[in-house]
Image 1 (cartoon, rainbow over the protein chains, first blue to last red):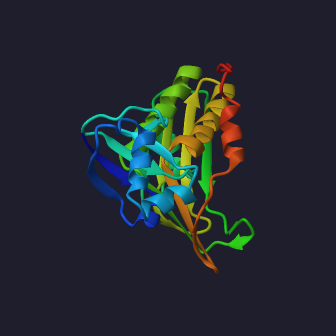
Image 2 (image 1 turned 30 degrees about the vertical axis):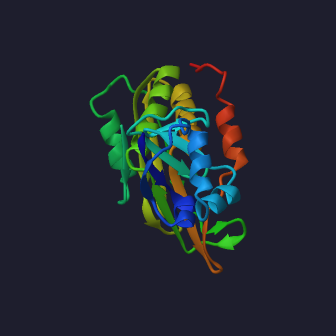
Image 3 (image 1 turned 90 degrees about the vertical axis):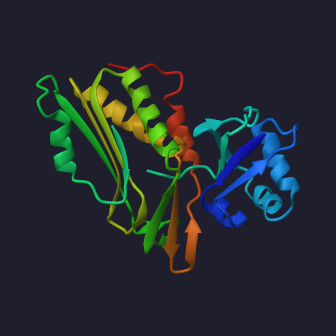
Length: 85
Length: 154
């Protein structure tokens, strides 16, 4: 399946992009698996996720737990804990 | 109603709009968050707010819907600014209109506690030592968790 991946704030700066579209291997079906797969590509993703252990995720613009399922066409976002207000 | 915008907001005009023509409104509670000139001991020159367009509005609407589910409210407005701000600039406005002060105060605090931990905004501040992203505070998580498991009070 293909998913759009968004990065925000410190993570966006660390990976050097705010958006990428990826075709995922069949085994990558959850948020946590996607994070692992992105990191398996090496730097900067491996370093960024290692340096920022509290990274949160959203699927289709709703907060998502690590075991949340992905689907073809999903918009998956990774970001540090929020600091608005 | 929720809005995310660069420009400042007019608190008086927003309050008047929210309660206009509704004689049942007996209480209006209002919270304004403001950029401070000091954070973690360092002088702040500017604060830039990034957000996740689309998700931000959904998250704020979800928080307002939760507040309406807990308390009997006539109207709720959340306005959050993004972009570059400076000390003394307003960042966020929450206004709640209800029949009595109890639910207005409580709902206003509830909306802010959830906004701080669930709405996708991020602050980057510039200090004399350079720019840095603001870290999330555990005290904000604790403030939100107070509400979990407790029903709305009238």
